[in-house]
Image (tube, one colour):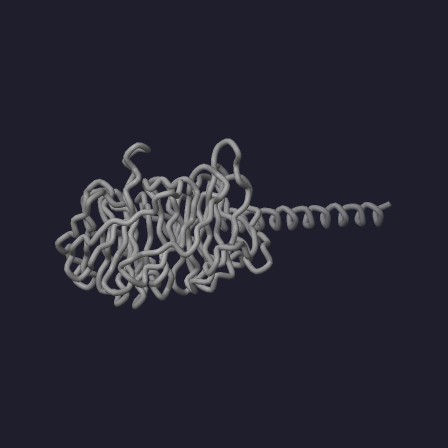
Length: 344
């Protein structure tokens, strides 16, 4: 009888050890899962647009009252330049020496000398700008802000960046476009401008000369443009559109040569924000009202993982090396590791 009791006690003790091991393992898994949703860096700022310098690791982010300059290697805030006029879209000159900022509350394009961090004399425009891209031949292009439906058919503004003068405004009569608060992207060779109208229409424009011409345009499902992102190679562009009634539930990877779909990401209703890795093989997507960032393999159109953020990011961006994902939330900029592997 004593021998049987010892065996039973041993079994009981063994079961207790196994139970404790199981509980510790589950706890470790839970902690690891929770940690994958924690950003590695945060800044208490509402950010609207991003741009990167082609010559160094600096990333620029527009806020309501200035420009953040962040080192994408150390993730430290290098500087914050105070700038009036509600900065929105921004772009860097080809030589990396100047930053052009669309000030949405002023009829001007702000110009910042990147080396000295000094604000240079602005370029005065005919309308308050919303987004901007720098092109070839000392040209820049800016879209107008939202003036209301009846007064928002102002065209794209062309600027001479050397003289600091407004050249002209161009638009496309006959196309059912709404120009307020519209988005721009430009090809790596700076000869093709991509314009996303407020009501979903994407236009490819030849801007190799001072006489811009439509190459191709395409109307999309949905009622409004949400985001526009071009892969760094210039081969593909992602155009997020949506509406609250007939919600689109996919995001197409469009070939920039002819705007035909070369793969579709089934991200769910109402794609809201999108960015890709530098090589274009990974896409980061926010589905509106999901409180998450989806991470996709674009080559096989398969979701790899999902980052639980509790609220929607409004803009996404990656650094030149693809190590970090910058996500702009209301009142907070968060920086995450960019790959699914680092989140496990």
